[in-house]
Amino acid sequence: MVNKIQRIYTSAIEGAFEEMLHNTLSQINANALIKLSVFGKPADYNEYKQNLTTIDNVVKDIFGEQPPLTSYIAQKTSCGGVTVEATYIADCNATIKYHRNYRLITFDGCTELMTGGIVPRFDGGSTFEQSMDIFNGIAKLLSDNGFKPSDIYRQWNYIPGITVLNDGSQNYQEFNDARSIFYSTDNWSNGYPAATGIGTSTGGVMVELYAVKGNNITNMPIDNPLQIAAHNYSQQVLDGKVIEHLSERTTPKFERARLLGKTVLISGTAAIKGECSNYSTNAVEQAAETMEIMDRLTCKENIPVENNGSRYELLRVYVKRENDIPAVCDYMQSNYPTAQKHYLVADVCRPELLIEIEGIARI
Image 1 (tube, helix red, strand yellow):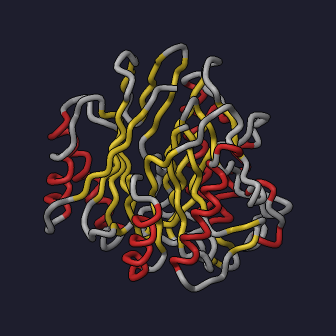
Image 2 (cartoon, rainbow, N blue to C red; image 1 turned 135 degrees about the vertical axis):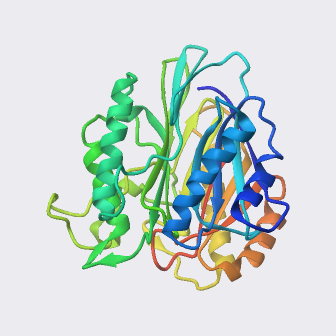
């Protein structure tokens, strides 16, 4: 796996989306830049589509004919403007092949596939229909480049109205069912990807993924002793009716984290112990429990290789209620001051949960 570095940039001005985007991207060093994740809240779906075009035009204007991969995530930022996560390739000897919405990166005997945001080929449709179309496209993308589904090691799943029920069918459950159908085409003996499933305000379902093939890297799942593996949840904690394609609701297919080389890729984590949620209405209490769970996940004793402990490099903090952000930010900065952090307004995968946090740590 090629080493990557993440940096967070925020618009220094207020104004129209294009102005804030241009201001943010102008702060970014183009050297070794491979991907941009753009966060901001559009007024509605039409504005989201317009902003997608704006992102494409501004990125090409600033970064030229081989621009970085991009994703546009419809989540309000804590600054109210535009925030961008920039991902850089840290290994200068890596070879990169450029394709429209993905890159193939070869380094030290491994080949890695990185995508931008993958969306359905059509507007509208149910969450299940959108998700199946996305996964059909992913299946072809992987196959065309010699990868298997089980080569995916990190996945982000963005779902508008994630906990909304439509005629008894929950959007998140529909996504999980589509993912389970796709994943059933392969053998996952080395565990599922690290993953995040999180809500967005608009824009349709979107998936990003990283996959890797090559035998010379450490690549293994990490369980959390404080939590039941999500793919082993009981039917009691899954919501929504069973869709006609299946005999029961399927579980979320992801691991709590994956270890790639010396990098710990931490899945979206919430205040869930065993498989039961923390029902506190205090967001800081949920944030503290979430970090207790994450600290246990990433502690020296829980990482399945010899190590001297780990440190957080980046924490992406999703907060359900915008007015909770100042208190959550104070807690996180007081207790985890050295990690890069940014805060986003987003619905979490269970209605009672107020916080979800994902991250990257190094051993």
